[in-house]
Image 1: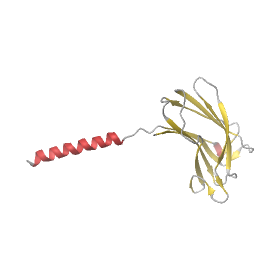
Image 2: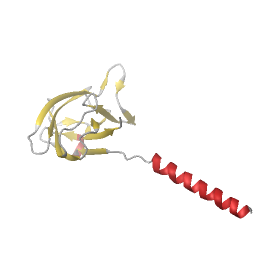
Image 3: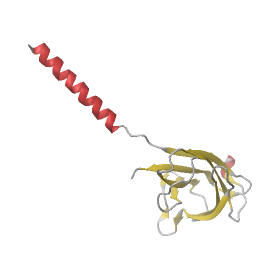
Image 4: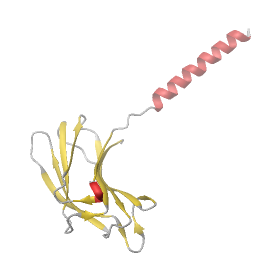
Length: 163
């Protein structure tokens, strides 16, 4: 008698656990690529490049620039020329100033010891891509200092937004 009761309960627990596992699993659509700079020097000739594939043109995405720098970085911001090339098209560029900190509050982002990482949203609101396919991007340093010292890496992060 106890054996059949335990087998039924065990089967029920396994079934409910499986359902919970199936419905709690959610695909996370994230692309991230960071380029590390030798000697922490970001030269104007260093073009950070990458590509990602958009399959679902109905989905919305957030785009971030990720800047990792040391405490010795001497500016509160960074200027970048950001290019995006849709499939079968040409690059379109936008100049962006990203605030990395201020004198009153210090560095933005997360820090550990003397290393800071700022993730800066660049599209304001989630955006959709018009065409499916391979998108290319590039990030270029347009600050006056060349090389720009104490920048460890720059990258792009794209996250699918669930709506």
